Image (cartoon, rainbow over all chains, first blue to last red; front, top):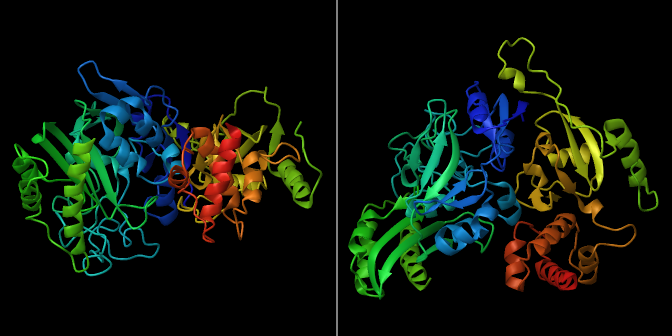
Length: 326
Length: 207
């Protein structure tokens, strides 16, 4: 690990100022950053510890409805907060199915979406073609180890999936990442925070260098919601596929549905066509399956992951049932 | 100032001497840690002057205050093992995948390999060495012995510290809940049934 120098930011503005220096990265939970520096994915010259900034953690109800989660809130604290647990079960479940209890005590909700891909070539200790690691070097996963990689939105330049759980729930909830930078800040919709390779195969998210996530805002309560995570072991494992479903139902008729799939694309993948077709359908009817199938019309397998299409389809169907039961 | 509760073993002796050489154990009442500036030289930029390497931190470890001066890249795990000779905390994967390095930071269980020692100023750390009360084992340690909850023992200190955290959090309502909330501690001997039983027993005892 290359050595770096260290500073503690005292306020959000202070952090933004310090982050303007070249080769400077923010440290929150550190559960990703430390591994990046070990592998050589990142080699910062300076690290700004943002964990001591006051007023950036906790969950609060917003006067206009919804909640705001401070970016430094740990995953465990966010998931177990009554405002999240009761009003947004999809988010609480997604978070508690992430990582381990220890990691969730360190990792923050603001840092979690900045996790980088788990593609073995991106994480390789030896140089391998990877456009995210070394732009222009190609994509070794396209014809290589791609069992876990994308079925939606991939290009020949990158077939990786984004691995995080919470952002999938946040995309289904139409949450917003609130940021600050030198020119003020912006509100970034969770569903378009991550970047598809067709837009830029080298990018992970739209967050700019020196821009800091300060909080996450979620709108109206979504008690009829659920997160289903399918993985190779029951706990402490990344998703093979996951599905976040938020329903608005009256009796057994769907009034509105939002579905985001995880670990199928470089961003949480909203099934827009499915959502449209689900409106007015009766739970448990054949129309539900047809609607989900319609959302998979543009799914494309890689050489070794066709199974993920069926797995994701069935996960979406089952997550709809789970959400309706909530 | 710092008191060894048990009789002096070879490791204790090595530990004490190394502590004297590598760091200072100091009373809790002295002033806050100071950061030694280095990045200032050659830079007129006051922002750049805010960054330091090495960094000096004051951190409480097992009820003893330590002042450590470290390169910022040193993890809490390496500081514990290499600087303070607290080798009960194990280095397994060194990337947050195995849980062998679990310690309590301000009462919360964390992977020491994922924490920069430079970021621990003012924190309170408890390692496996800090659990027993003199010669009396912590109830979780005792439960691990009684339930034969290990084979090779490499993961055990991480398992025990993690279990202490798990019990304090109240995630011990059922065997399934224990297994879920202890999943961050991998045991390659697969002593999981005994580990879960030990945690369950210790949790019952603590209520």
